[in-house]
Amino acid sequence: MTMMATTRKKLLSNKVLIVFVLFCGYFTSVLHGQYVTDHFNAEIQQAESQNRTLNVSMQTYDSAEVNHTTSAGSQTNVSVADLFASLDDLSETTIHDLAFVENWLYLRFLPLLSYMNEEFVTQLSWMNFTCGAFQVIVEVLSREESLITDRQQKLIFTHLIYSFLSRADKADPGCHSNITSNHEWLQRNFGIFSKYATLSQLQTLDSYFTEFDSLGLLSPSQLAELTVTSGALNSANMIDSIFDRLEEGDAFQNMDEFFWKLVQSELW
Image 1 (tube, rainbow, N blue to C red):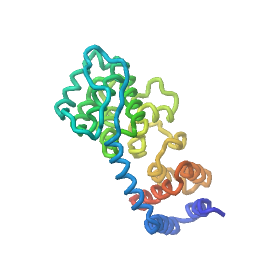
Image 2 (cartoon, one colour):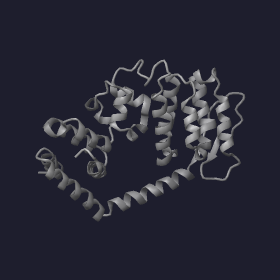
Image 3 (cartoon, rainbow, N blue to C red):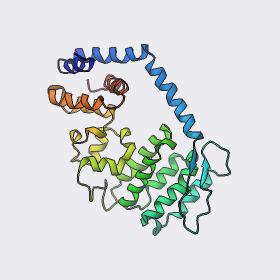
Image 4 (cartoon, one colour):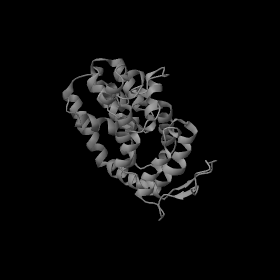
C-alpha cells in the first residue's frame, strides 16, 4: 500500500489520527530540508525574475513612445510618478478597447512593474473596465507570471482582482456573464491568481460556486479548506478526488502545503 493510500485511510478514520499525520507530515518535510529548500528556491526565483529581460515587440498606438525592451533589474529613469501617469492613458474610451488595454499592459504597466504598489493597483481596480477588458488584464498578467514576484501576485489578487470583482456598482458584479461553468469563471476572472483566494472568498463572489466542479484549479491550501468545510472526511469518494488532485505535479510539495494548511486551520 502506498503512502498516499495510507494517508487517505487515516483521513477517513478520525481526527486524532489526522492531527498526528499532519504534524508527522510537516515535521518530516522539515527534517528532510524541504522547507529550507523551498524557501531558498523561492528567493532564487524572485531574484531571477527581477533580472529577466522583458522583450516586447508589438505594434503600438501612435501616442506610445516606449522602449520595447526593458530589463526589470536595471536602473531606469522611470519612477512611481511614471506609473501613476500611465493611468492617464486609460480614458473612458480606451478602457473599452480590448486591444488597447492589452497594449497598455505590455508597454506601460509591465515595464514599470517594480514600482507597483497597493495604491496603484487599487486605483486600477476602480477604473470603469468592462468584464471583457478586466479579463484581458487577468489573461495577460497570468501569461507573464514569470515576471511577477509572489509578493506582487498577492498584491494584484487582493487589491486588483478581488477588489474589482467585489464591486457592487458594476453592471455584472463578479463577471458572470457569458460564463458556462465554475471552471471557466475561475480561469477567466482569476487566472493564475486563483491560488491566493480562499474558498469563502470564491463563494462570496459566486454563491453557486461548487468546489468539486473545479478541483483541477484549486491549490493545495484551498483543497485543505475544502476537506474541512465540505464534509469530505465522511466520504471516501471525496477524499479520493482530493488526493488525486494532490498527486498532480509535485505531489510531495502539494501534500506538504495541504497538511500545513490543515494544521493551521482553526476549524479542527
